[in-house]
Length: 262
Image 1 (cartoon, rainbow, N blue to C red):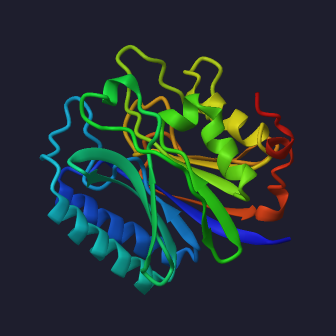
Image 2 (spheres, helix red, strand yellow):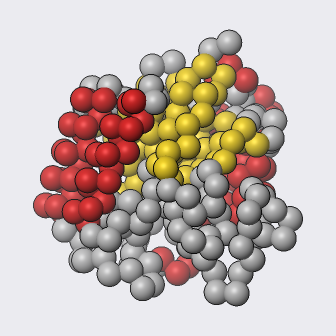
């Protein structure tokens, strides 16, 4: 068995951009104590997702560069890789992205969000292109929130290019009048968590989805096996790290490879 320990930072939405950085540092330190090889944060955790009702200051490239440097230093100290949900400014446009940091604190690169939710189009611009990343023996991709839920090809692309696991940083708080689940993928709940099961099963890969901890949310952080069964999930609304050991040899990518494009 070839196991790799992952950590999902199911922590509270930061009150300020500065708090997002200190919270990320703390989570990385905790993941190191748990002997994880990689940690993934929710969508736009630094500086905070620009949702309705969230007082996130205007985009500040100088702050972002400084924040990324602090997180990179924490990654190097902890000797683990980081998938950091964040944002970046490219040619004057604000993009949702995931910054991938290597175990030694060097920057591996970005995976921008390519498929935006319609509600995001007034704030963000879509990125372009997809890539995979490597940390030790683990190959992984990133599909951010909406694109992972609704666009299966974003996950399939990564698996067809060798990914054992696809990380899925997302942001989802309570929906007014929505069902509040207590178990993962409850049939009475929204489609979102069922989609996580499908992304793993239809591609024979691991799928790791990570959300902020918040009361009443319809989704939580979870890890799904390549056969579409649930490996583990974080109790709803409970902040903390979800730690999981995955046997990445189970992620054969068989069904992704057999998919014929049309």
